[in-house]
Length: 338
Image (cartoon, rainbow, N blue to C red; front, side):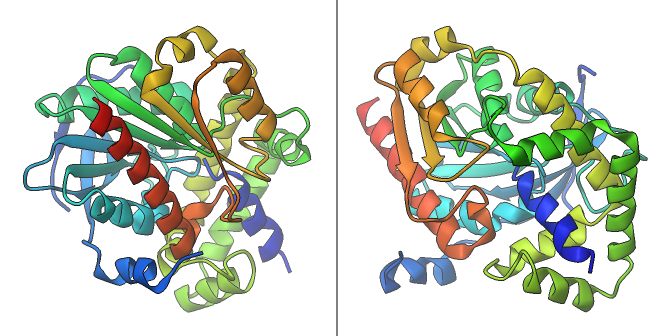
């Protein structure tokens, strides 16, 4: 059966200059797990960022002291992060509004008519969103990025140093891991037009199945422990020809860009305003990168998650809650000192 290989491929990715923007609406104890049932609910909004249809996930605080902007990995489908973002909002106790922004071309509908977007274009998209949608936000901006979203967040921080007060990188993909056979396979697929087309076509075929069948197959393969929002996100958004094409094209440009040496000087300069969370067995953010940051950026805030929640933490409720607790503790600790 062909479903397991393609869905395993999806799990590996967990991760023009723009001018104008206009939007419209469209191990846990019982006390911790109860937070999942009592949390505030995020709302989705369709946003037009310089002509590109963009999904937003938002929770607004009445009197925010700061604003959290979340940048996803690749796939950049923010539905994967519903549990995490809602838990984070509640753990911050209403002190912050939270916004998550999707990547262009990675939504249910083929808004961009099959156009492909590079890592740089996805970064420019986020910069433009901040320039136009968050320009009137007077409170400090806290960036939280996952996987390649961490790389994008650091780039945003570099360009908006007066507006960004803190940057948190979760399971960061900051450099190509030459020891990873998984990355080598993905790179071969991403650079091959034939393989990209074949994989995208297979996704399109699977998308034609009745919804209950695709959900059942995902739950029986990669999604055995996944939360309902994560299963729905894969079936609804990722199993699309244009989405797979964009995931792979972005991945190809990631491998090209991340072959460069990280900007250690910037990290040293801003180390007091950054924090990094790594996983024990994560080929996207391996522990040798943890060691490189430790050696090149003495005093950097670094942590290793050892609970087994993995790079795809947002696909489970317990993983989402644990990482949300870690992020909220980092933010509260930083802001209490500044």
